[in-house]
Length: 164
Image (cartoon, rainbow, N blue to C red; front, side, top):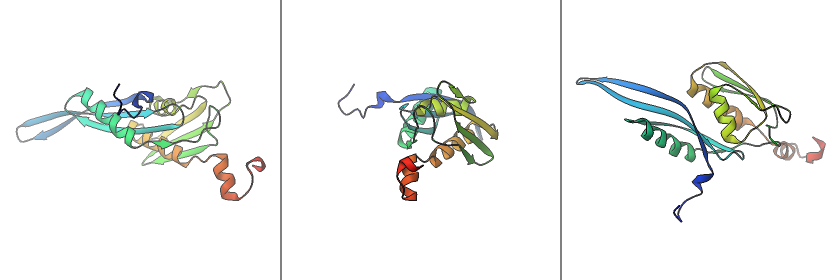
């Protein structure tokens, strides 16, 4: 490990989907791959990235690099989310609901990767509309970006946190 390392070892990455992409050109077909990757520190920070390259490992590496540049902070309430929210992106909608301790992550493939990388251990989700992994991941992140912690809500309302 180099001294200039930014602590990248703390991030966990999940490859959500890998697509083979073909571009038809005059000389024939150009084959490449796109990889949708979700990374997170399992403590309330997560991001996603789409990497494209001629080989799968290069596409995954590029996706991880892009995801680390687009990290968001997600407020947690213990091992779950503070409140219910619906994230929307395109035709994809993802319902995210808090769950009692011990419930686990009840989610489909793309949303499960997002929740696990963010460190949310007890949550119930439902993916509605689009089944496209890219739209589902973007909708899940849109919902997580809307999350507000109890402290943030109390500050906005101008009341102590205990009164919520």
